[in-house]
Amino acid sequence: MPENKLKEFKRESVDRVYKEFIDRVKHIFVNREEHIDVIKYICVFGSYVNSDKPRIHDLDIVIDTHLRPGISTEDFRKYIIGIENKYFEEGKYISPHDAIDYHRNEILVALRNNSKMISFHDVYDLNVALQDKHIWIVKECKLIDNPVVEDGMTKEEIHKLYEFLK
Image (cartoon, rainbow, N blue to C red; front, side, top):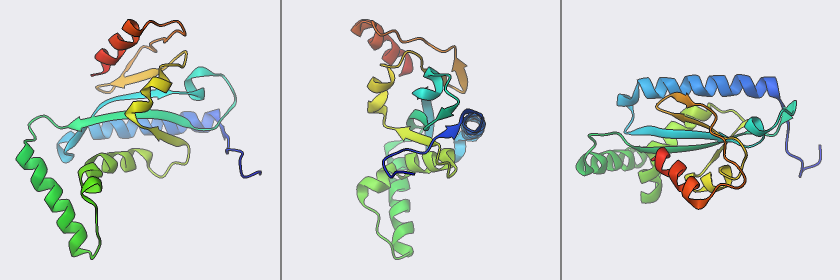
């Protein structure tokens, strides 16, 4: 296979990975007290939801997380110090930036579950997702009926969608 060609997966395989992914999302949502972060929303976009092709390159997903309600600044500071100490005790170094993102990355690693089919995108990539004709949004573990994003959406309509996702 040429190096510049992305691996393609059967749609049935991606369907299975998506179902397993949503099961993991539900598990994290139900057990959110175990995490300092909670999932705010998930946006699935790209070829998986915008085509009927039998083979797909990946499952494009944007995940937004935020601190669990009730977590104070002091609680978060103690959490960060705990992460830094854990690394120090293991003779490793973690940058302050990575320590701050550790809780979010912990959720992403659990959700990916080593799948090569899942491509996580930054929240800022939501602009790209909004260019697709269809996106799937999961908020509070409920699939919101495939909101259609038309090519001719006005900035106000896109802003309303962003506000909904907040």
